[in-house]
Length: 201
Image (cartoon, rainbow, N blue to C red):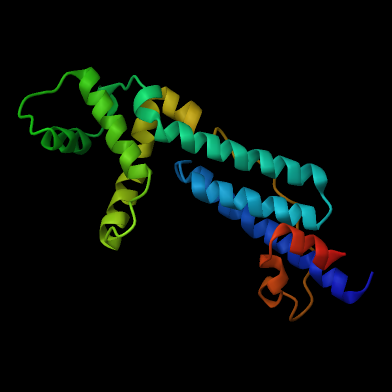
């Protein structure tokens, strides 16, 4: 095995480690960053395929598909994820919902639960193009603040849209990388799957 192939192998292992860390953080940080989870899983599949690790590549593809399915269930959350135990929601969020409905009095729990799911799915679903960056950041922050309480108040959200654990096992530890042979030195690691396979041929 030549030096170039060894260096490429180390770069693939390094890519696997970094992608797995990103996937782990996105799962542990509320578990609703489905776009990031899917992207990491697809890139992991490419990296495993480049290393001729077929079983790991298939598992990563399956994780990517699951992330997409969880995203779809979240987008339909208003119709599929109830009921919501309103008593478990943060007071600031309930006040926000009442203000949104211009309701001075306490809203019925079933209506409050539907409003909570609709608002959360809106926050977690991302902002439309052209939304000011400050508004996007505020929506993301609110969604992350709500995840722990909503997972408790709405068990179906926790079971159908979040992960019980990281969906993939950690990759093998990378071998030592020769000086100048780090991931950043190899543009080929950012290519598509066919190009990766061709590069290793």
